[in-house]
Length: 115
Length: 114
Image 1 (cartoon, rainbow over the protein chains, first blue to last red):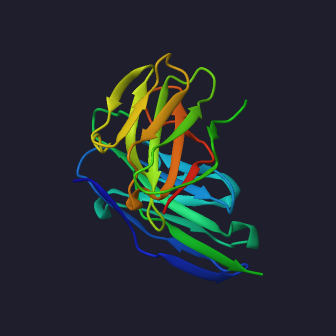
Image 2 (cartoon, rainbow over the protein chains, first blue to last red):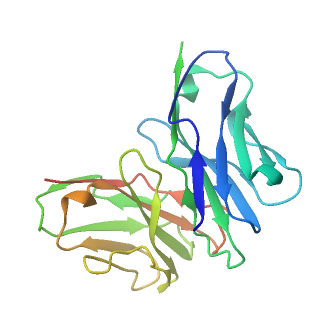
């Protein structure tokens, strides 16, 4: 069965520190990959997505992610975090040729940025 | 554009009671999804509609959960009877096509079953 694994459940950083959140998925075929963010009290929002082409994807608010097919990974990065990045981050995969839009989410990573 | 609307935002019921949630997607979005998010986990798809037809309900506990989208616009998700393990946030999302591009999530309904 398809699955998504996020390595870090809770990350605490100081402002200006660099961020990398790990995401691995289990599916051998074509995948579409996503990172969603949920700020406190707000809706889930799309941070960035990968469908094809350049494996380095840039999203909103200075976030980027790199798709490494050989490692089944799609790690999220930001060179310098801000207090406002405090949120929960979800990696998600849409796998298979049917492309029904079904997303499989990881369990999420809570990021706490200390001012 | 207006976002995905959900109501109620919070609901507390006792086990064995029934409950219904409502979702109004973004205007023109043909695809509508219901997700269940249990505390500490990522959202899990319960059911997907394309217009008023069901595309995927493989993870919907059909003995107690039901959902409908009769006119291809808004949708209701019902639980009857509720169990303690149904305590979760129920998220509605919509998109303009069956693909994952541009999926918009609503604020969710937080259900507590006591």
